[in-house]
Length: 205
Image (cartoon, rainbow, N blue to C red):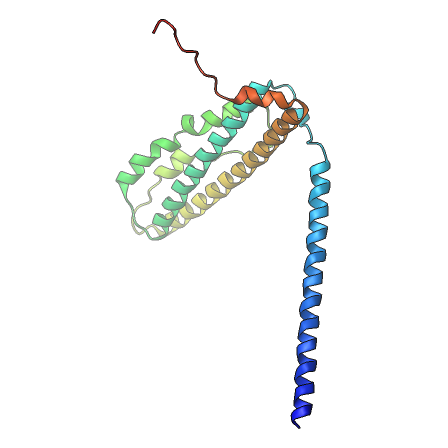
């Protein structure tokens, strides 16, 4: 009986070791495939973006920085609206907060960065933006449940519109980054122009 148990245990152990070795082999094979795919991707030269070809290198950097700044603003607007939506859902009104933060959603503030980007590179597929300032200042009367529900729905639609706009900004930022990498790949020395320059010391000082 003891010998039989030993043989059964040994067989089970061998099976476990075999299964573990098979799993290790499969993991190594998957890692090899991934490494090969990554090496092939690195071997491809960076692709230019024709829509950005008219920009100088300095203009491309400025455009990319503007995209990044606009994305920061949109993320801030989304957080404001999400907070307003949370307050609306609990029917909690804080007029001081509305006054303090509403200035960030004025039409001139919302459109300024967007218009700058469109002037640099026309984009006809940029989603329209809602009237955030008017939406922010809407304050239905207490107990007017239909009006509160309508405000919640409109805030949700505005948040979705900002999300679409943010996605568009991410796509443009990716394109600008690809164009910048392609130019650096073609002319490696051009990346040095992005480094800050030192002002030579004044001998007379």
